[in-house]
Image (cartoon, rainbow, N blue to C red; front, side):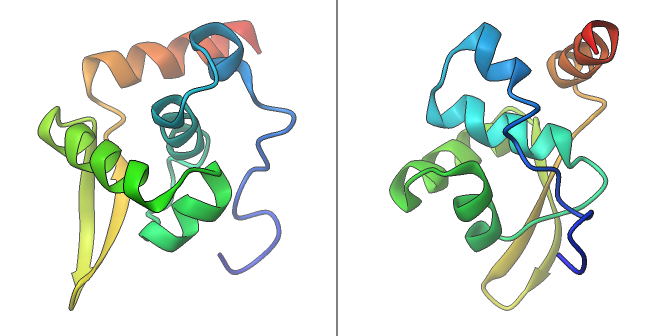
Length: 101
């Protein structure tokens, strides 16, 4: 997160939550999709998506199992997570967002 333009602020871009609901899983997906060009650590996702640590760990594990998110790099115990934009569901969401915008 080098500059203020690196991470899109969610206030203007809450389309996914508007249609799918304001749930922790949706918040995480929405943040990662809107910022699909970068990988993020758990702390960054916690802050930007506004979810609890316990929920985020469960959500990321589930999204990893479903191949919707992948670990781009590992440094010790730290992992950087990134949305898998070629997953059928994720690519459909991205396409739908582009059509609506």
